[in-house]
Image 1 (tube, rainbow, N blue to C red):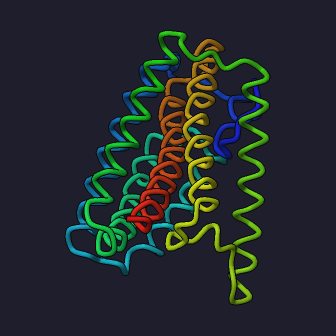
Image 2: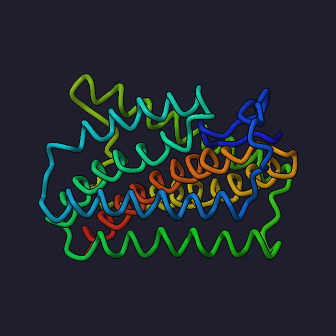
Length: 241
């Protein structure tokens, strides 16, 4: 298995799996499970967004993180844990979206449209072989994702001491800050291609049917990251109006 920048999908993800049902996963099956998960996420997000309920942001993220860890270590539970993860992440994202919507009119709708548009476009490009993830492509995306993770970690550590990287702030509308966010959005988008390829390789290797849910989980992780970064980028661009 090739390397991936997605923490939920790595070379050990599809090793030592037991298949008790006899069915095998497919890319289309994983995409269908992703659609179901996204529907659950959006319903939960709409609840907190429409009510402006910010109290569920941290419980949603912390609960989602715990369920994500369970999913990673108990993949056979993914048909149950992934929908729960989707709902928890939705509760958190709805609250965050409400904060952005209060500051920037129309930004949430734009971010949703762009996220789904990028997902659909890249899935089509991958299935029609317009985009072919070569080894150099995989290495480049993996390295860039690792570099972004280091910046995130450094900013988080700095924020614990009362400061942070200004380049990460949605209020920073400098061209350097916008350029960084645009770069992150591009890399997050390219990680979707990596995810598609990873899932297809798993399907070809005869992974169990329940791994379609785990593949959906991997795609969901990337899509949540992409959506949040698109929100941040649009906020920065709005600051230049």
